[in-house]
Amino acid sequence: MTYRTEYTLGFLALLPLLATGVAKGTGWLVTIIVVYVGIPLLIWSLVVDRLASLVLRIICRVRESSGHQYYFERQVGKPGVSRRLLRDIRVLVFVFFLSALIVPQVTQVNPQNLVIVSNAFIYVAIFLLAIPSSIHVLLWVLEDSGLRCHNTMRLTVTVPAAWASRWLSSLGGIGAFVSFAVAMGGSLDRAISLGFTLMISLLPSCILAPTLFYRRFEPGIIAKIRQSKAALTMGSLFPQDSGSSLPSSSAPTLRSVRVNEETKQTTESHS
Image (cartoon, rainbow, N blue to C red):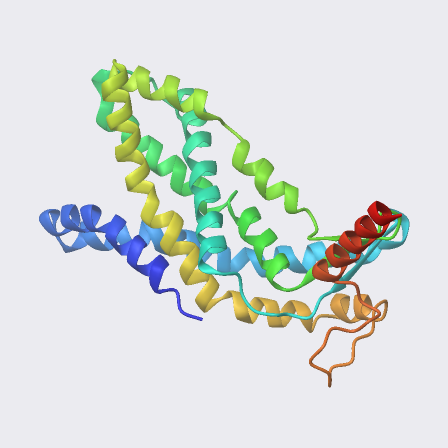
């Protein structure tokens, strides 16, 4: 699987920053690359696999009392480019709007200190991308690993905590950023220009860091997850035939559950 689209978009968004870095010198250029891409990537590579192991251990302890059954579905390939870009946008929205909530709490926001506040906004956003956004990355790694939750009462199969990523993206809100940008720019026109500039500044990090993580680190983390003791314990609930290319009949999949629901609805309509 290639990531040509994400790399192209990421480097195009990075060009204005690279041009600034070239004008200011090699040291500033290296700082841009390290801060914008290197730090988030380093933090994710260090914490995501540990968080995944912790989540699996918790699942193994609570699965009996929760009324749900957790297992690993057979992997059928990585998410497509559109889904990966949607994930990048969610991360961008998360760090963009939440930064607008945090920055006014740590510095005075007004048009007179535009440069100081803009820099503070970028630093806060990079911090949010590196540490809190690792929860986003964790949830996506668990989804890509094939981890599924089977609700035996509702007969549904879902990705565990899939709602959490959407909920995290909703933190902050457009209103918070609009009020921040207006306070910074002094007028709506300047606020729109400032908002566009800040978004372009964050876009390279939110595309390149996840893309490099998916390509360099996620395959190894997924292999570690699926070979862990917790995964073997879950596999005993829904044993699968490793020699067959077809999913095991004892392990429900997202697709099979959807097909069963559609068949049930069709039968009820005919009756």
